Amino acid sequence: MLVSKNLAVNEQGHLTAGGVDTVELAKQYGTPLYVMDEGLIREHCRSFKESMDRYYGGEGLVCYASKAFCCKAMCRIMLEEGLGLDVVSEGELYTALSVGFPPEKLCFHGNNKTDSELSFALEKGVGRIIVDNIYELDRLNRLAEQTGRNANIMYRIKPGIDAHTHNFIMTGQIDSKFGFALETGEAYEAVKKAIECSHINLVGLHCHIGSQIFDIDPFVRAAEVMLTFIAKIKDELGFEVKELNLGGGFGIKYTEEDAPVAYDKYMEKVSEKVKEVCAEKKVKLPFILIEPGRSIAAPAGITLYTVGGRKEIPNIRTYVSIDGGMCDNPRYALYQSKYDVEVANKANLPKSETVTVAGKCCETGDLIGEGMPIQPVEPGDILAVLATGAYNYSMSSNYNRIPKPAVVMLRDGKSRVVVKRETLDDIIRNDLD
Ligand code: LLP
Image 1 (tube, rainbow, N blue to C red):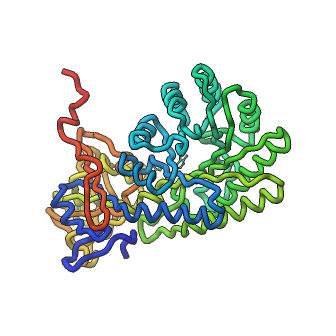
Image 2: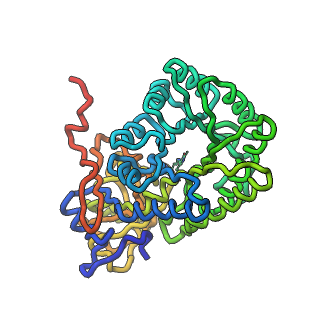
Image 3: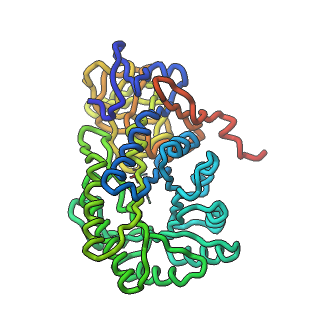
């Protein structure tokens, strides 16, 4: 079974993505190559939007977390699908604005935004600036005052939920560089302060409990904790928090071991909880935002490589070397993330081998995976790593001065380049003589 639903094998035994022969793509555009399926990206956007409509009467906004995969084409797709965008740097913000993204549908994140980033966001009228700490609040208030503007903000809150364990460790998350802590009273004091700030409009609260989460319960619990806080703010300070941003983090299937929940189940359960707590605490239903990144982009992407060589080390392992590596996909090196691989030109054969896929960087840890089941593989084969649509291109680097691969987008059986392959001249572009 192939992990993403847009993948199949054609009569020639080649892997296809969105109905397009990936071996042909490798021939046409060269390797390494990122391939994204626009149809599947749009399908994911619609399913999140539909679940917001079905379970929460459409009183919310799905914002794609562009850190997962950001380029002009991707921002345009989000614009056309009616989503908002979560941006986390001036670079992502600039990319979004460059395609005419409405600033009011942008959420600007970051735990240490610079004055230049904040001024840029203010000047462009970004809809929601997610303030991370009290210093940022002061700076933003001052910058807004200087330019005669008001800043619409949300506060990033640490709700004290550890989503990576199945038991919630309610204090575990206090050790995080992001946001204001609830349990120490830090968040409460910050709310009081924001209400008093002359040029700040506190529209909502935000939390993000983690990434690649398979369980719905931590999300439901986070919603409950956040609404309880919203009720306290109303009761004690007489202030209405109108919006609640519950972040992203929905898990996807990288390998057979992963069992993600259907995303509409998430909105169903969270909406139920939000309505229940609001009724109980007599709080007005907030406008809800969610920020899926990985779940929109990852399953829609694959990366194609050419195999350069094999190294069989008896009784130890077999290395298969590819023409990319940690420079285009650092996730195994960073997190030991698991991926499925296919020999794209032999995808109909059984996976009779187990190999370590090694990159070409001058670094022992430059691996795409170890113990990977694969079809019989030899130099010249095209290797496809699956579900690489998120946090691959966006985390790529020029380590070893290796140019970044191109990104090709597939739509209705056709392909087009949306990000050009870097050239050697790009590599020396900023070097001065
Ligand atoms: N919202 C906020 C505030 C976030 O920090 C993130 C991810 C998201 C939304 C989107 O989360 P997603 O739906 O994609 O899980 N580089 C890591 C993932 C880092 C995620 C950081 N924040 C990886 O490759 O697994």
